[in-house]
Length: 362
Image (tube, rainbow, N blue to C red; front, top):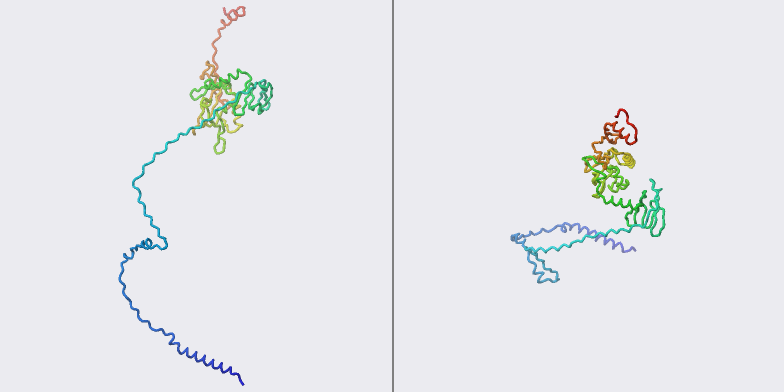
C-alpha cells in the first residue's frame, strides 16, 4: 500500500496553481488608481506687507508671564553730557635737586726724599733711590715698582712722577728750587713767551718751549691727541678736548681738528711720526714747519717759524726762507760791518799795550 503523502502534495500544488492564475487575472483591478476629485480653491484676502513688517509687542510675555525668570530689562542708552566739567588744576612741579658731586679728596704728600737718580733713555735701566722720612729706610726702585701706596711712572734726571692709590699723580723733586719753578710755570697760563702769531705765521721760541713742555707725552696729553681714521684707514692725528689755557689754542688749533700733514709727511703710522719727530728735533732757529689740517671739511695750512722771541734786535724781516729737503730753512741775513778806522784802532791798542803807532797813522 502506497503512502498517502502524494495526495497531500498534489492537492497543495493544485491550490498554488489556482492562486497564481487568480492573482494574474486580478492585477488590472489592483493597480488602477481612482480618479481624484477636483480641489476647490478659496480666495484669500490681500494682506498689506507693511502691516506684517510691524513687530509685535512681546514685552507682556516676559514682564508679566516670565515663567522661567529669563527676562532682563534692556539698558537704555545714556545721553551724552553737553556741559564739560572744569579742568582740574595741574599739580605743582617738584623741583629736582641736582646731586652734588663728592668733593675731591687729595692724599697728603708722600714722606719721601730723593737721594739719588740714575736716568737713562731706556726706562728699564733708570733707577731712583728714595728715603722714607718716617722709617728712615732707603729703597732703590725702577719704573713700575711700588712704594707705600704709589707706583713709579717716570724717572727724570731731577724728579720722579708717581701715581697714588686714589689716582692722583705726584711729583717728587730732588731740589726744592725746581719744585717752586715748575709750580710757577704751571700757574702761568700765558704762552706769549713760547708762541706769538703774526698774520698767518706763528713764531715759536724753542728755548721757552722746551722749558715749559718737558716731554712729548706731556704735549700729547695737553692736546689730547689720538689717531683719526676714515673707513678703517688712518687719516691723521685728531685734536681732542683742551683746556682754555692750553698751548693748543695758542698754536691755532681747535678741538676736532685733524692734522693730516706735518712737513709734507702724513702722520698715519708710528714710523712716519718718528720721522717727523726726528726732523723737527734737528731744526735750528729760523726753520719753518708747515702743518696741514682739516677743520669742518676745510683744509687749513699753518706755518710755524722757530724764532728767538727774547731777542728784540732780530725781526722777522731779517730772515730769508729757502727750502732744504722739503723743509723751509731760514737763515739770518748777514749785516754789513761798518768800515774799520785803522788809525783809531792802533791808537787804542797803543794806549792799552804801549808801543808806537805805524808811521802812516800820525
